[in-house]
Length: 262
Image (cartoon, rainbow, N blue to C red; front, side, top):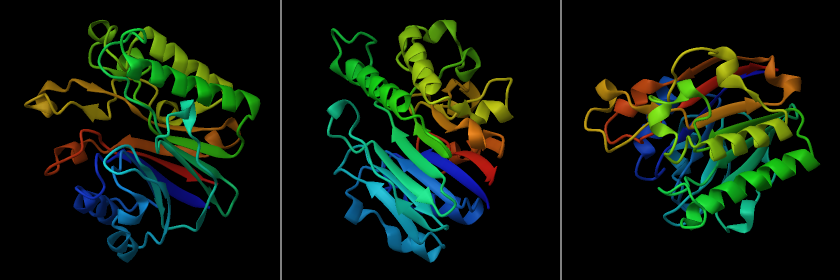
């Protein structure tokens, strides 16, 4: 089985239904994982997606916040959802393909603006969320699994436009990078994107605050595709669809793709 997977923080699936459909028509990923859907599951506009061949969906939703969904052309079955850090947020859902591969779709909390859990509850929640992920992977090491999503951390120096300038900015602080590293190591996850694109600056997010995001190019790689070692060598073709950041009324994230031959 060969399939192409994409992950995309859509920043409201109902507001950007047309962009999701455009991606489906133009890029035709077999599986599309969305984060920050901002919709109850029953209000996700599945009819238009089904018309394009995406007949399967597993999702967790909330009104106006969070929300994750896995849309697929291939048959999938629900494989659970976790309430990480007991936040009561719709930030994780898992699906299983017929070949036994499990896909985890995560939306890690952004963490607010101040990288100090003593004065910023949201930053503490982010670290606790990652700790819960780490401990779960350590206790039950995943196999034949893919993990995707907006992890809200750019771990490498070349995952941000200016490493030194962002060391005290949430998403690239040393404590977050270390926490993400521990989480990755606990599950022995392989960073598929950097396996395929090992060198050079690579971003998947550009702030709405930048009046000319493309020319300024002050990006961060916040969106990730990981795989367990038993299937990571089957991955190839990783890319970021940067052009989608320039579509009309876009998300501030661009989709990230990878293909697996399994």
